[in-house]
Length: 165
Image (cartoon, rainbow, N blue to C red; front, side, top):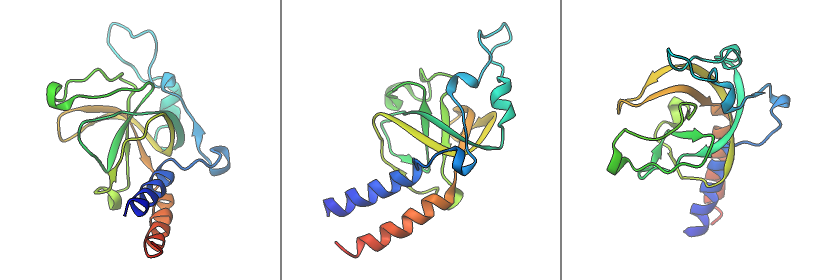
């Protein structure tokens, strides 16, 4: 049971953090420091021209999965540095940098539970630089929607492996 669970977990994570070369697949590398103009002006955060130029396009971003108390279902936060949230104690108040990015799985995968991964990870998908309010009232300024095809392919593979154990 543990082997099967570990294999499935590995395959799902591999699909989400697919490590093919970005340029080969048309993904443009981007970094957290390209999201907002610095220093922050009197009117607050302003999107950087770099992130606006790739809005609604395929990008690759490397960061750290934010560790939360509850499960990540269908989405998770990616930050420029390791962060642990305490939702039970702090509610939706948090100390995440504004550049923290919401990584969203495809609608067909919205019920998938995503286990926390320590260390730097790379995600690839379509980026959106715009205000987006979640059901809990928190706001994401940057979102990346992960490419569903790579996840579907690995999901099919993981189902085949289940029967072998």
